[in-house]
Amino acid sequence: MEKFVNILLNLTLDDLTKWMLVVGLVIYSLFAVVIVSQVKVMSETFESELNTWFQIFSWLHLLMSVVLLVLTIVIL
Amino acid sequence: MPDVYKAESYKEDIKESKLWWKEVITSVLEKVGETPRSTALGAYSVRPDTHFVTQQEDEEIVLLLRAHPITNVPWILLAVLMLVLPSVILGGGLFAAVPGKFLFIGKLVWYLMALVFILEKILYWYYSVFIVTNERLVDIDFYNLMYRMITYANLNHIEEPASATGGFIRSLFHYGDVWVTTASEKPTIEALNVPYPDKVVDIISRLAEELEKRREQGK
Image 1 (cartoon, each protein chain N blue to C red):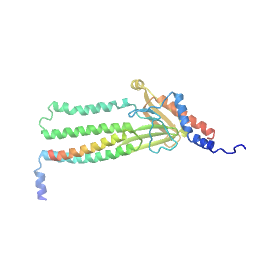
Image 2 (image 1 turned 60 degrees about the horizontal axis):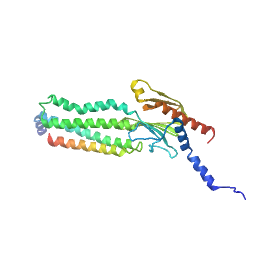
Image 3 (image 1 turned 90 degrees about the horizontal axis):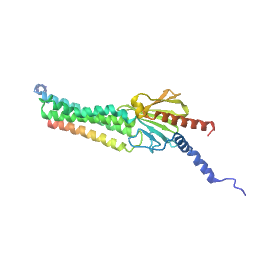
Image 4 (image 1 turned 120 degrees about the vertical axis):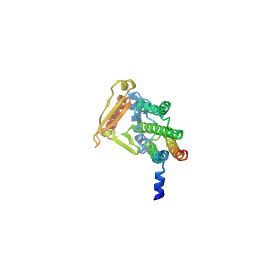
């Protein structure tokens, strides 16, 4: 408990910003997963040549959000 | 001895009776002066070669409509603003005291959010469609991330459809709203901001009329 309190007390503004960003990006990545499933539901609505492209974009978006999460943890 | 039974013509009759709706669509489109046309990002597709969820075997899409592309201009302007904003703000030196690595990550987060904003807007526009088939009207709307609403109205059960256009932009780009009243629980099915609303109403009326004629003839 004392160790945990020490960690909290030694937190700088940079650390606080970093971990707030990390939490935000974890939530954002979950949102990106929702978008992937949303695009899947939408694609089932009607056949279209663009369905595959939209699905690729949604997966790319998910990939980018995960990469950004990792970058935030590594760089900051 | 004369033939009492001809199997071939019977088969032809069956085939003809099964495909009667194709002729109805062709004749209705001819009367209105429309020919089949469809583009990937088009807002007004006539007899497109596509299928939708819950489409039946003896059903063909006559019109596939979505909001006129010009209705996307406001969010496109907002998206451009979102993409330009970081350069403008950072150029002004507002965040000069913030460490470079935080600025870098901040910029990436901002651009990712701009990207998802654009993606969402395109998806809502592209997949919110109004479909007219030879049997019914299908209104597919996406309200939020996981909420899809599909409304059907059988052409046999619709009242007189109506359209509305008005205003400078709508008149200039030939788009407006179409309302079709039905006898069901949800009294009105609507297609908002679709191109050529008068033509849409004309096609719906003629299709409903043809169906009514066939019903009266007992076919």
